[in-house]
Length: 213
Picture 1: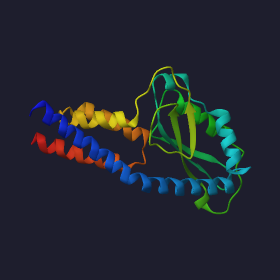
Picture 2 (picture 1 turned 180 degrees about the vertical axis):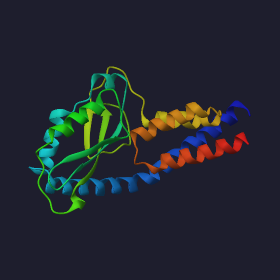
Picture 3 (picture 1 turned 30 degrees about the vertical axis):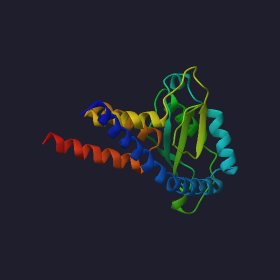
């Protein structure tokens, strides 16, 4: 394939990716808004002082670590935990952990909430799943969170979501599977609720397996 033809097809792949993401953006915003409303309702009922006090405790214990900022680590860490109706904390887990000291920060926060929960009479108010978006100043990302931790500009420009999408499409065209999937995994880490990325990965892996036959 001639160079110009190859560039044309890469451009088409990238454009299609942006179109798919744009079409899903409106739906994703609605789902995120609904999720955040449910979380707020749950916290207002269970946390002493409500969702506002929960947020104060969070930001008193969690900050963007220097290591994470310098490594341009961004994404949505999802805190999953249980507070039974007698206020016993348990089953703390991080879905989509980000590392670089951020996991420990959120673990410290969770421990700091002990004794700050209201009693309840219904088990449906005991399970929490709260997305926390870590993003760096000046870097575009589509991730969404109930709480947002903004990191200061590290002194150099971090890569945007659009960059990793472009890299994925270019490497896919060149049949560089491992590196292509690495770029897509970065997008999934930054926006774990974005089903488009999972569909893209599933489709790519299926095509890759067929090519190997």
